[in-house]
Length: 115
Length: 113
Picture 1: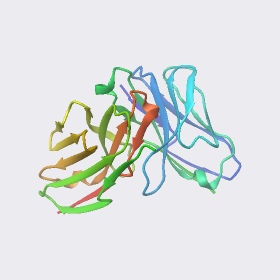
Picture 2 (picture 1 turned 180 degrees about the horizontal axis):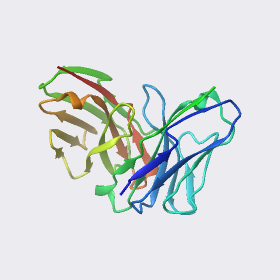
Picture 3 (picture 1 turned 45 degrees about the horizontal axis):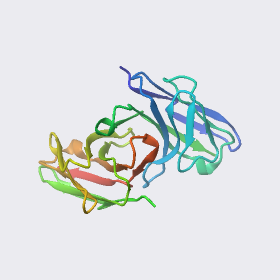
């Protein structure tokens, strides 16, 4: 299994541009999440999904959209990039097997810079 | 408000020494507590996961403890290695839904030769 994959690894945008960060998992996990990690800070939840067709907002959803048309894919869209969105973005997935196995598997991250 | 506080913020130890990282939380209702290791430039990787009924869990040289009464957890690293240099993140879930996890800011561990 490839696990959780993210593309691109690095991206530079100009203020106002839009783009989509891709995330895919091949473990048939129902739960998928997007986080951002700023220097010296913990991961903050942007959006999450508990299954195909179902998404919900996390802690910092403004400026981002998501959709979940398939179990495997969970893209994150930046509508109009702002310098405050400069961060490292992580996608994660987890199974719904119960509290003792609620381990999240993280992708390698996308480092985004908005100029 | 659910919170997870980790201490110390950073730690430097010599190779071969032991260390203990702390995690205090106010998340309720409690489902599980996880420790992750995050190498620089990489995504977090799970080390241990504990539910309410578990008070200790080991993964090689890593041993996590949980006191659900005082809402405290610790991660003990034995015989540290240079490869243990990383950020260690404590995550507490109030539900099996991944959207209801609270992340600590992490402890940055540096192991020096």
